Structure formats: C-alpha cells, structure tokens
Length: 42
Image (cartoon, rainbow, N blue to C red; front, top):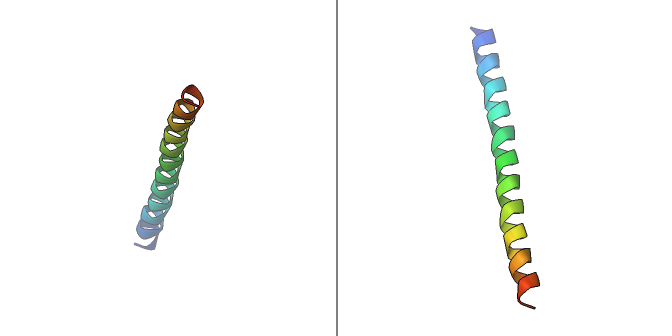
C-alpha cells in the first residue's frame, strides 16, 4: 500500500513540473508577442 501512494506522489510531482513548464512557455509566448508589438510601434 505504501508503494502505491509513493508512486501517486511521484506522478503528482511530475505533473506539477509539467504544469510549471507550460506556464513558462505561455509566459514567454505572451512576452514575445508584447515585445514584437512594442518594437513595431515605437
């Protein structure tokens, strides 16, 4: 039973890491778009 919960916790950690990575990608995409707008319209 302990191994089952340990495995679930590892899956949760992996999911949290993936979610953080996706947030970083989304943030970078938004900032790149905003930078392009600022450069195009000085």
